[in-house]
Length: 297
Ligand SMILES: Nc1ncnc2c1ncn2[C@@H]1O[C@H](COP(=O)(O)OP(=O)(O)OP(=O)(O)O)[C@@H](O)[C@H]1O
Image (cartoon, rainbow, N blue to C red):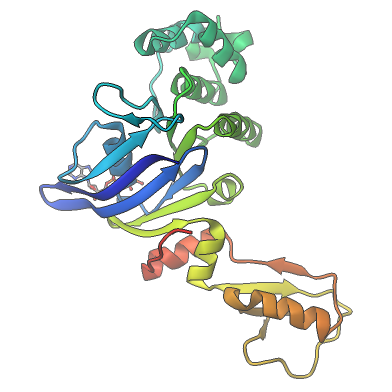
């Protein structure tokens, strides 16, 4: 079931088309990473989903996790963590969260539960001005997840956080995902998001360059897979032409990786090797440099 179905979405500014004819759907309970260069149209897409700006053309349809169509009279419950959230430094964490809870019509019990979930319960009576960067970001996440949203939009949620705070943030997001929350994360932290996203939505100059899981993007870009053999392994004198050696590794196009693995195990009788597939960073660079297009999985 799709939480968000975007069709033919186009947004023009007087001198610039920020998004052109975007078609994508976000499924309930998945994490989608929104990727692209500065100015690609990521924030514009988030603003359109939030409804703070209007599109010239196209539609965005929302369904809650029970599958009900949402509209003006029953809008989807959306949580949003902007990149630079300003919080009231002279208020306590509890006061700040209670303020957002009032806006959302959320109960005091839920405020306490959310403080627990975001590991802020013990510091709820301290002034936000005394919070560390990680604590402030957790408070930002707390206001976004208050009220159990069906859709969570996060803009660079872990910039400047240490590995412990980052891990904690993603643990919280993963537990929301498990109960059906759809998460769209705009980020430039590629090695990190590769461990957490289900699909990747790549924008380039307002166009949809790719939308799919990592394997779909690896298939479409067909960058090399590399295999490191143990130092004592003996290679045949000549390799089939679809395989090549680079930096002491045997390589092939991603689409040939199964054949290469078969060759190494059957022809070379080597079984303890290390396979390195193209990572998200390499795949994204390929899309952004060549502007390749694929459709999702
Ligand atoms: N209010 C506006 N008026 C005119 N042009 C705008 C406006 N907002 C955005 N743009 C332009 O639309 C394009 C997309 O901007 P957008 O902020 O969506 O990019 P982005 O991918 O979020 O970039 P970044 O990673 O830097 O945040 C850019 O060329 C930007 O200059």
